Length: 371
Image 1 (cartoon, rainbow, N blue to C red):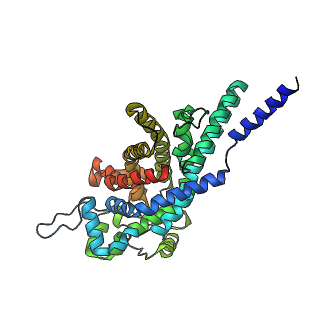
Image 2: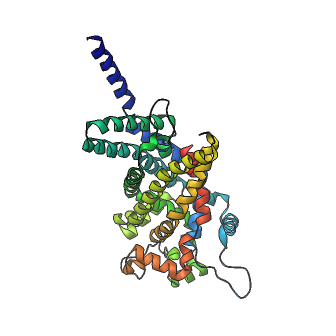
Image 3: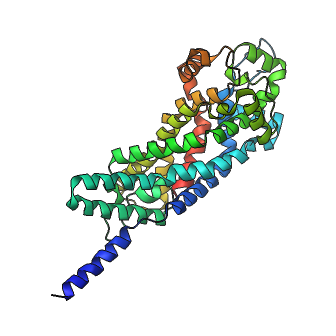
């Protein structure tokens, strides 16, 4: 009789150790570093996306060249020709700070939230289901250690030998965890996103004194509404925001930023898993690098299409620097007013402005993050 209890105790200790999660701080750090690497590689595309979104409608003069570039390629040529190649790296400093902190929190907290939801669910269902949830949670953490620290690392459906696959986590749990982690990170780090956008759109603010900038401002364009700010760097831009808009101005557009982040994180975390599993099932390919690359690019396609309208509205809100008493979308109800202006100036297609640059940015960024 004595030997069986000893063996049982040993088995219990082994199972507990396998299911114990890694330190949450390590997961957040690795996730932040992976997103920072992706941001460093895709900053020029982010600049192009912002320029396309803040650009005034195309002006077609009777004679002479167009006053505004058309499309992503035209914007790229226009930007490099007038501002130099270094302009493609505007806003890099706040972008990296945001990526390290925001990316780490957004992806690093996803896993503990999933584990917490499954733990609460298992407690509610009784002891038998608790053992199953424990095995599932153990697999989730094992995938994170093996992966890059991104969502795909711990929910990509690979089996770690004898363990159950992490795909046991249902879609509802993935989406809830993704929305919660993404919204929290976006709310906390909204000032860095605001700074990044203002710096990337620096040509709009610098040109406000020219004939083009004056005409755009007179027409009520949000992109040219920065007439009293002419920042030349991160510190001066931050000081200008606080001086003209107050501390609360740093959290302008935070609601739309949280919405975008929640949608982005949920679609990334959920779509990547399902797309990769479908690819493996449909093609019979191994769960290798090629499958990861294909799944990541397809995930970027979905996330870009879903988030671009929200991103367009968010950019307009970030670029509004007028006072509280000035006319504009604030008087019409924040995000809803901004959407009205976008529709009035560009039509429904305006909500998808910058889609190409956004996809070229999110596609590789998703690859780097998950692979």
